[in-house]
Length: 214
Image (tube, rainbow, N blue to C red; front, side, top):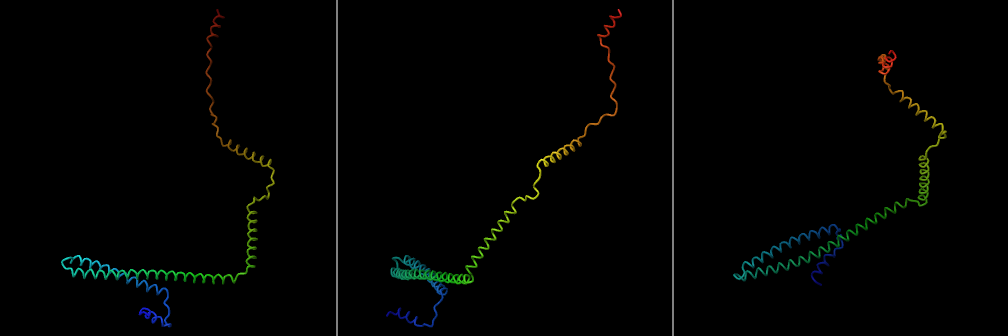
């Protein structure tokens, strides 16, 4: 058995240790991701520094340049390992989040099912049918009352139309008389009219009188 297997076997022998909650496990995984991300950033910077150092020495100091390249390769290997570890942790975190979500959904659905069962236990189907029938009857009665109110009341509508027309004509004539009374005619002058001037004898009658005298 490998040392890694012995380590995990020994770690899991304690049955008294309680399993962590999903929230605790997710928090630990996020902390590990954050730590590895910082380590990843550090290695990337070191790789760039070693590369710049190797270029600086170049052919002038081959030994120093080779040492810088070796450190660069070592850092690149660590960076590759961290990339794989981050991918594994990310996959595990997503699987745990999905499992936690499914657990919460299942728990809430079970809670809702129990609540629905408790509500239905207090219901009697026969009483529900009677209640719905009573509601329908009351709606029909309300509809009949509304229709009765909406119809035009016919109390005292038996009138003689001829008498109504005669009364209407009488009212119109009375209104016309009032309008005629309100019309103001011009006043008649109180003084006498001027006398008509005397008529002058016509020329023809004067000539006939002169002929008669001669």
